[in-house]
Length: 312
Image (cartoon, rainbow, N blue to C red; front, side):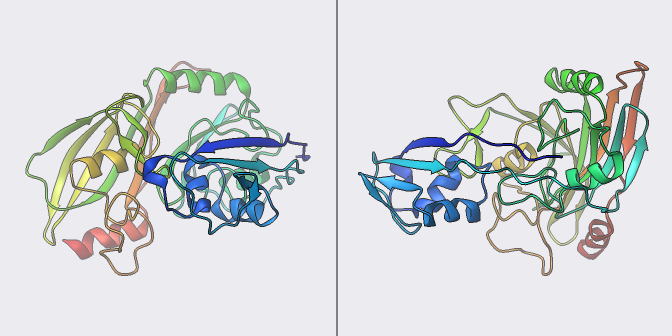
């Protein structure tokens, strides 16, 4: 896939009261979550940040009401190259495939992350047979899951299938059921959490249930088993699909996902655990060509199974 030129962007950011005194690279990362912090620091180091008419460094701490000018330079987007990374394919036909994404794999390339992603692996497996609706950095990608979330993900090989699946996502008709281990035991066997999710007013790098703005979000939580060591094994069914929805909603009821250091405890409560214990287990949709409903199950990863046994 050949590289292409991207236009230079001159972005202005006004500092809110909650951001005053924070490192400027952290503030910018909150406003531009699509960019990695290392990439932001690289731009700042090259003189791409100004405030009050002067160039600032990454450790600059702005004041409330101050306006930053952040310039993303005109540069060559790196070629996204196929990589022979093994894929756990649950299903495949001429229109789409369903893959079981492993932990610590990023779904698609972004600034600072152009290698070892699911897209790199898909390009090696599918060649040019990937939909192009989402652009050169996201071929075939209709929806995504977080880097440390495992499980089922559908990928489209052509634009017709992509449009059909994107339409089902838009009306929330796709079945998505996750398995998670939550901190604390649950009193109720079924809980429904609702509330608009939007960017957190306190931390722009996080999402939150917000009083104003945001998008409607509903998560249905079913208790599978309270574990003996003070945790709960649950199934979470998404009625909507917002960024970090399950992680935000479980934190909202004060039972964050085990291992989630963004919305839960800053320290991992279980030694050796990397990232949140969240697995996209069941994915169901109407096939864009046959019109038949299909449902797929991604088995729990080994680390998850072993953790369940250790905590019970």
